[in-house]
Image 1 (cartoon, rainbow, N blue to C red):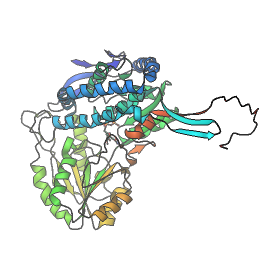
Image 2 (cartoon, protein in one colour; image 1 turned 135 degrees about the vertical axis):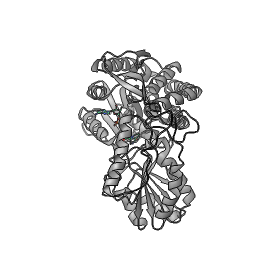
Image 3 (cartoon, rainbow, N blue to C red; image 1 turned 120 degrees about the horizontal axis):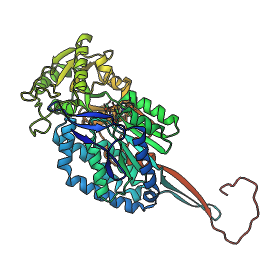
Image 4 (cartoon, rainbow, N blue to C red; image 1 turned 120 degrees about the vertical axis):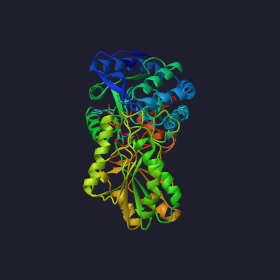
Amino acid sequence: MREIQHYIDGRPTAGRSGRFGPVYNPTTGEQQAKVALASVEDVAAAVASARKAFPDWASQTPLARARVMFKFKALVEDNLDSLSALLSSEHGKVKSDAAGSIQRGLEVVEFSCGIPHLLKGEFSDSVARGIDLYSMRQPLGVVAGITPFNFPAMIPMWMFAVAVACGNTFIIKPSEKDPSVPVRLAELFRQAGGPEGVLNVVQGDKAAVDALIAHPDIQAISFVGSTPIAAQVYAAAAATGKRVQAMGGAKNHMIVLPDADMGQAVDALMGAAYGSAGERCMAVSVAVAVGRTGDELVERLKPRVDALKVGPSLDPASEMGPLVTREHLEKVKGYVGIGQQEGARLVHDGRDFRLQGYENGFFMGGCVFDDVRPGMRIYKEEIFGPVLSIVRATDFEAALRLPSEHDYGNGVAIFTRDGDAARDFAQRVNVGMVGINVPIPVPLGFHSFGGWKRSAFGDTNQYGMEGVRFYTHVKTVTARWPTGIRAGADFNIPTGR
Ligand code: NAD
């Protein structure tokens, strides 16, 4: 059985714990590899390597670090095909979608290539007579990122590209479900000229996460995953005095107003609800049909969901691949049963989908519920699968209240031709990322990504200047150069006069 190892100090490293987790091929349902699960000692070895590498990496010029990022970007592009295939074979998302997700990570690498500009501090001339005041941004030291299974390339890049460009050294703790791609990224970073120990990968589960949180040499933790774990990691890491940001789950609504282009709205819903089998934190899982749109939406959606091409993740004809594990597949199907018991109307049931030749794969077809109401579990909880709930709302105000009052607040979209309604919605909705006729509003690398409410804990977003702020601290220097004038000791607090 192929063994997926840690990547520490610039080389693949066997684990010391003797513990392993299974890595499946979701298309066939077979275990294709085993991944090392780190012990406290494995984590300590990675932290020691990152700590050793820090002083030299931090003292390199921002331009020198940017040049490594430029080379890394080119190498990821050169290897895009093999990285996408590897990602797809462990995650189950179709290869073209895997490539797209790597591209969205690369956009943050591109952003980090501009780090000399982004690290510029502020300067105030003559804050007092003969005194200048300036600030600079300095790296924190060793920092760690804990990432979810659904974006094994993009989310690590969101984190480490900014962190290492700022001069930190980094430890990725990927999901144990699809751990290979982060190791390839670390190898490519090394090939790009990144010194050993600057980017390490520690494979593992809760034990690895707990060891990272407890380690006194780690200065900051960035986490992305489900809300219960995000809340735990946020509290535990903050209690040790670490800087922490923790992004959680989601229940993203797409509002369809009666004046929307229904063809566009249905296309958007198909991609956003069933792309990556709904395993995206920005997937649309609730369609809010306003006024008379409900019946038309259901009528148009049913045949489209029926025609959805579910197939092997590496088959270019597939629109939707399998789910990540059998356990997750059963959980998602379980939610469909719960929705029926709660009285929602299941207008398309994909639970019995079977793919000839891949009977053990983790496949299901798309599901659509109509008449979903806010009190139901299928409305309140994140399902993270190809299950779309349609909620009917009488008018704009009722539709606006739904995402605004939901516990999660990651993304939301509105489909309309009415600019006034769209603007009003964007201003008032209580959600972090808003799309206007855009179903999955993931901001570009020079903005930042982050939800509100129970979708994110902490006060900085991922990447963009928010990322630069998260991975640096500000030092301010107040400087006076002797002029020969001796004023004598001053026993009053200095002021700006
Ligand atoms: P998860 O919470 O199960 O795992 C995330 C990470 O935490 C993994 O590295 C995992 O090994 C680790 N982990 C799991 N259990 C742990 C525990 N008890 N203690 C400490 N660490 C633990 O999430 P997942 O299933 O891998 O990913 C899907 C979730 O991530 C969904 O809820 C999705 O919405 C969310 N997500 C959020 C965003 C965002 O930016 N808000 C982005 C992508 C995914």
